[in-house]
Amino acid sequence: MMNSVNPRYVLRNHLVQKAIEKAEQEEFDEARRLLRALEKPFDENPDFDAYTERPTSSMCTLRVSCSS
Image 1: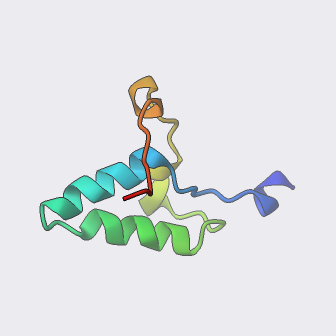
Image 2 (image 1 turned 135 degrees about the vertical axis):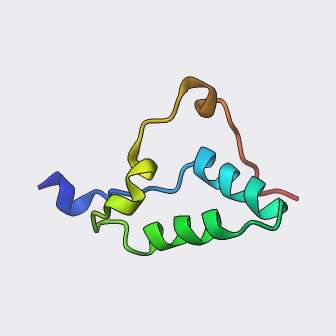
């Protein structure tokens, strides 16, 4: 029952940071891939399994700010 109301893929700071770092190097594949996963967050897709892994403790300290 919980799987039907909780998304499998959730936008997390460490995922965004990785996509930003790649995009700054003109590599946009990670950003596109992350977007594809988030377009259907409830649908299981083995191609996006890495986005369901628990973040490491160092990833949990990352803070992303939207103020600029």
